[in-house]
Length: 351
Image (cartoon, rainbow, N blue to C red):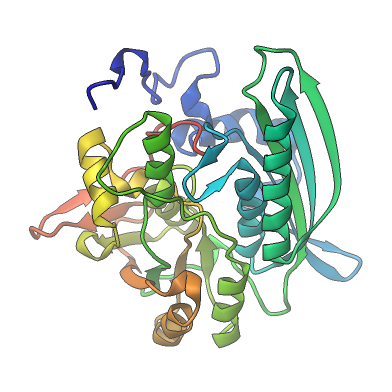
């Protein structure tokens, strides 16, 4: 901690009326939403884009396809538990899985900075290929561009993916109703803290590894119990808090979370206490949150716990008909607090 240079840190949540792009616009919070709603959506138009989900669900040739794209700018390129190559596959596979689709094909675009070592490029490409094979998805097409030295950060990656949505599956926040049970698939905050620990050279007594993983198999296990899941989200940028707020606002319901039931590993809790972070806002890369009809909740929870990526799944709250569009946490002391949508991002460049 003595070597930590705090003078170089910048605030990721600047004033919202600034005329230029700031880091908070990429954080998955209010600034990101404003960028999409005020600039991109009006410019592009179209009904498919209006879904604003992790993936768009499209009808094409009689089939229902899920289609998603994502860009990865994580720093550092390699971290405990994964690399930018793993993220590039798992992030897009998971976005497709949140619509119920099993990913089939990916595209992959590499943007390389002049001067980056080819050995590093090779390591990232091999990690990406291994992650694709583990997820059961094929990289079918790609592209490479090189930018001048000083105009990138080693390697940026964009992936897009397509998959088929099974018949009878309709996952979207508008289906959430009061009484739905909120389930999280495991410990939160792990990925963001893992990135920060290596980025800033922090030591927390134990090594914290990213939870980066492909969630398609877990989602299939849940849908095998019932196709009547209401909505799934992978709480990446902005963490669990952002995911819950997006669902609450889109569904017009309130969400109550029991703070003591949210699984936060001691190492993550300690790191967040040192850094002044709230674990609910820290990014994850291998977890999901599900809103499930109460009559199916026990069976879905059992199926999740029988899968390796859902072994620590737990119920953390419910949807309610009070305070629509808001997320409220009940604290261990018996009080309540509002869990707002973050303005920017506590930890920039984590995915």
